[in-house]
Image (cartoon, rainbow, N blue to C red; front, side):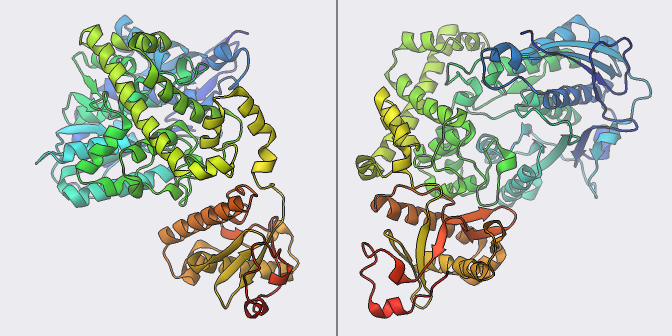
Length: 636
């Protein structure tokens, strides 16, 4: 099947005799559907901005918008290669069409974007009649003092790597930096602001200028989540800002393993292996920008030969390890919650968690911040499970590979060698050494996890679909089949009733056959049990059982939000361990305590039944005294 072709008409241009239904994008005009806002740039800096830089902002915004608006083919299937890719033909009005239409600029643009997203691109540039003023895209600061003059301009996402880069620059005495952030979501914007505030507090308010940029589409357009051309927009925003300050380079900090991104899975080919900061992509950015500006412009990645673990170590060495918990790495922004800012399933979460553990800074990146625990969390069949397994398999394989075997297996490395000024043999050595260090970090962390969970692995009490169980089982093909068929026996049933008895006077909650919870965990369950029992008395249906709002729960439990989040996590973990020790396997994370981002917490109304202690099995509850039993109330 041929790849789909798409005509994209931008800035109000019209095309006659069009066979295809075009996608129409507009940054200005009567009904704009692409929106660009750049904050905190002072007015004097805009006085002499060349037209080509305004054009660059608009062209990059249109490319990004079309990439997000037009879905790719399916994620699986025999024709995934061609159906995944798209053909684009853009018609864009610009201020200097002759420059944009020149062979040098057009070729650089097409080749760079084609590599980034693995699509075909064609551009037609026309003269933009009656262009909007540059100031249209800017929000000026309320008060404008002296113009800030940075030494370096850094692209800042709020992730570990870009944060480490900002810290690396700020520890240099007298250094001033400007951070440009693409704010595609409000959840990320808050994290970026907090990190910037912390950096100003530690290094001085006059050392840092933060320039947030909003590039957004109308809600009906953002249908494609891969956003492979996002880094081109990011680089364009950075380059324009750098030129406003008279600078001739931008810095993008990204660890080498993510930057080189040798595919961890055989099926991950082309743009499916993201090329955001790949050396060839950065070379393409330099080429496009240098052609447009008619002089050399640099795009650098100073962390290109570091592993993620080494980046984390640098943050700690520079005295900012305690801020790791406030960085955000997860690619699934829409799933982020205050309690789980990281999904624990995407490749960025995997890479982050392994790196933090390898660097020895687990205390600065709480495990409860991940919705799925790295080693013991359930990973149902699908791409996320395969990605996690491939992450560990690749590291194990690389540790055992000879030099020749490595380069034979990772053929992608051949295109990397030519992107550097160093001799090819030296670049090859650095690639191999980088990946061996990364593999060593991953394997050491995984081996420690095996030791920590040795007894649970031995008695089979871990979920059969957690990463530890899956990796151990994968060494024997028959083990994988057994793991799949025995899953219902290893994991507590999704609909099985869980009986508990509550002792309000003794601060205890007893689980049928599993044992009792005491202390702070019990007080948390007792608060939720009160709401649950009220719903039972009111004969509510399960979907109408009320949640206890976090602020109310904090007040009743006499703790703050961070402590509450940790308490919920530890309570779930304690209950799961009790269930496993009783031979029932790990219950699902929300089998007992459910939480909703918008509503709070409740006991799971489909699973939990509160009964008198006398109704529970004697096997693990017989130790309770008759006096204690008399204090338990029946919930119905």
